[in-house]
Image 1 (tube, chains in turn purple, orange, red, yellow):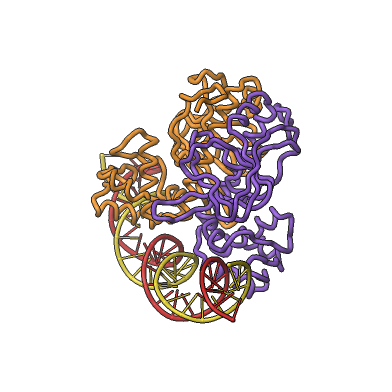
Image 2: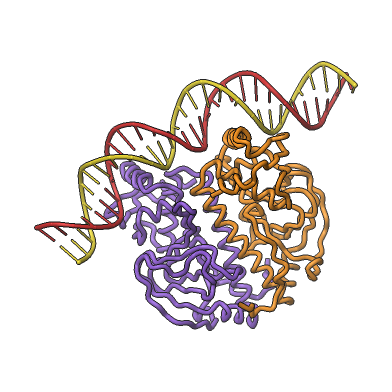
Length: 228
Length: 228
DNA sequence: CGTACGATTGATCCTGATCAAAGTAAGTGG
DNA sequence: CCACTTACTTTGATCAGGATCAATCGTACG
């Protein structure tokens, strides 16, 4: 089927749900000009909070970011992680409906939201790309819903590892930039369950936890089988 | 903040996560022309399936629709329900990544996907509206993620009842078009737990289950307190 | 080297799942 | 219109996956 809208097909990367509610905005590489000020954020620093006015759109140059929501009593659900190249923080509403924090030290370019809207107005292909990316995020979210609503702990951890591996362009080894707590809050589990599940996978010879942040995927096929 | 894009603010209705991954496409009422053929679907009839080519966008005239995904072994996660006025089935990808079925008998207008894209190309305000609705769905999905990942059974059921009430413009009474199984698959629970939770809420005097499909909200405030 | 934070492991608990049966309502055909 | 069927819901009894509570272990860092 040929798209009527004449656009940007090659920009589309396979969407894993790990990118969660991050937001891929095309940049200069894709032929779009969007500039902004570059800032460094350090580990655990807040980039924006739920309820803050959404004045900027952020593009991650290096590092990892988590996007999440909190309940009044502190329960946290991480919707996704952003990695180098991902953009996030563009909302339709005037305010952010989630928070963003640096998982590791980060370099981030902030572009005024209005500049993005202006670009979209003037450039239909940019507008289409924006919509398409948003729609892909939605599809990714539906996978995350399945994970949280219907999958077991092992399945969740397996999916997570595969998702990270895919994002890192690896098949044998993943390097986790985030803590067990972050993983747990992404998977709707506790740290203890994440930890136990990893050792269980290790005992089964499916992964090898070299250091807590470095995990070798010994049998990716078995992982894929697990992830449902 | 004044939107640079000059558009359609009043079209926005409050988004509940119940609409889930339904898709509100503006229609003639909003000054956009999109026509298509009207079809009747009966209870439990499939409208489209995961993996089917996404040729049409659907607008629900009457009835209720469920949007869901299945795992290989039959586990189902309902992402959302659509009600009269909602549109759904518009994807960025060429294929549907979820299935849609009639919960009740429905009347549905199907518009060729390409016609929607054409409209978006020609009408920037339509395009903006489309993006905005998609972005709102994403925000709604993030609430659903929190529900599934971090909330208890009572909290989930409370949220659900409030969401349905909001969609029906009611505060005292909800009429459920869907079965306990549908509710369970939306909330990531089992029918038994949904049923037990409802009787528990009834024993607490918070709701009254008149018939299984008709529930009176005796203390909406208490429900709101529960839903976290 | 010592401290502190994060991860792992262990023991126990509890929420919600599973298995099973009975109750209820809605159709259907005689 | 009623008897029968069938599907859905509720309730009960028990089970289990993952949570919670509590140490202990590692490891990065000051």
